[in-house]
Image (tube, rainbow, N blue to C red; front, top):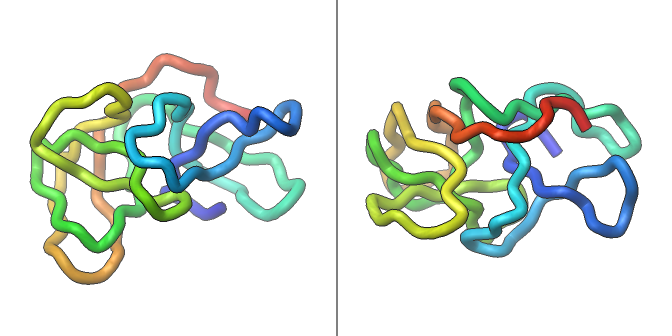
Length: 112
């Protein structure tokens, strides 16, 4: 895991988080703010502004942000579906993976 990765609760290990490659995953708890090495404490941000790692698709300002089909990466779409975790406040063109600044939806404790 790295800064900006989207994480979900790891249901196989107590007090742990993991990444997912399931699009629209509804178990998101936040975005990695610090840490991420194996067995290392990770600080998770669940509200406010932070950058998230996104896949190769374009992201536009105002897009809803969801988990994507690559571990830890998000993607954005103008459509509203269950599982949205944030709103994009910067954009990224189609092409390489990158980062966009988002406003997180919030709602869970910060550190796991």
